[in-house]
Amino acid sequence: MQIKLRVNGKSLDFDVEPRLLLVELIRDHVKLKGTNIGCDTTSCGACTVLINGISAKSCTVLAVQADGCEITTIEGIGTVEKLHPMQEAFYKHHGLQCGFCTPGMIMAGISLATELENPESDEIRLGIEGNLCRCTGYNNIVEAIKTGLAEMKQLAKNANIESHFDRKEIH
Image: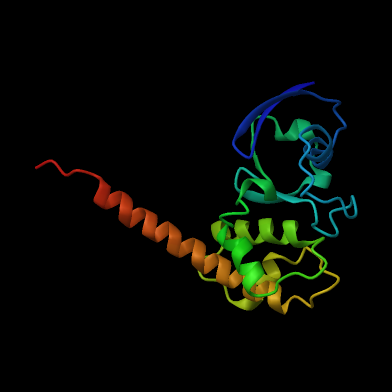
């Protein structure tokens, strides 16, 4: 089957088997290895990506189901020189140890920005309940997500203020 999608802002066309999983497309065809395969049963969340801005476990999404969608992986959110606010927050709050769950946790955390206004710790825990970490005990992850969401909100607010002043008013 022919599918078209955007991965990290890049338009791509593929001829895929109908049974190909999105995580396999991302890892094996697009060659982005940050999306991890942990369980193949939606139990761990290591394969979490954003599909049209909403977190999804790519191990249970068929590539053909993503036809026409915008896919964002961990590689598409920041750079070594300029980390995404959520990546920076994970770094500052020691929200990782072995790192296997980290890409999925970060993507799930980013998705919470569209779902929750000012989440408390218990809401964040509910929001990431499908993402497992075997190392940290979650406290640092929750604090990292809380900080990352606050920073994302502040950056969006600053961008709106700057764009307002960039416009020329005609009277």
